[in-house]
Image (cartoon, rainbow, N blue to C red; front, side, top):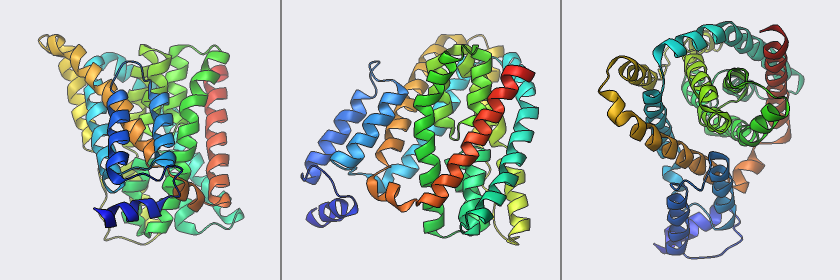
Length: 325
């Protein structure tokens, strides 16, 4: 127990020098607090950031796996609150935006990486994370790219930092510009990196925004497959396996059941409520994984590349939606 505690305390220079048991009590208490109606997704993310740097994350080695599983289960649960016909309509509308934004972001990211003299694999991971679906895209592309742990960690750090900012910034900008729920849902689905923050921001804006944002973002996530194949060709790694996001199929099944199976209406509201709690917990865990060591390891140039790409896709998409859609 003592050796584990020393390892955790060594990972991050914490403000509170407390025992592992005390760390666990604080962490679990905040986790339970995030399950209440008092805590919104942005607040959960903020609480995670605070606990990561104040008292520490006692279960850091489990964080990545738990976050992935919880996010996927939550997304499937949200499907029980959506209608197939509305989702198809939103998906069609977001299709052109998706293609244009993905490939323009990847091309711009390549040029920025060369201009800033960023290591090629790190630059490509940041571009893919911005273009498709954040950490999920990086996790899928990294094995194909055969990137090392440092390259993957830097890319994830960049995406999660900007993703955290987006969760607070986008709803505020959306209200300031008086965007409709349809406009906001489409905007945040394309311009916010990670599915967790897309759903978190959209749910704060309204139910229609949530449905459009979730559908468009998950349809966008399927582009991991062609982009991974393209990556394998460019980096000449033909033997690498591609991770396919199978949970999207379960999300579609949940929507179909909610639309066409009348009995689903009995349990659907409860499943959606549980899914929203799961999403809030996901954002808490994401925040809890962003300690100061991770933030410092990112570096100025990769963060600058990620920021420029994010500004490009956010402003470009917003202007297109407001004036040409």
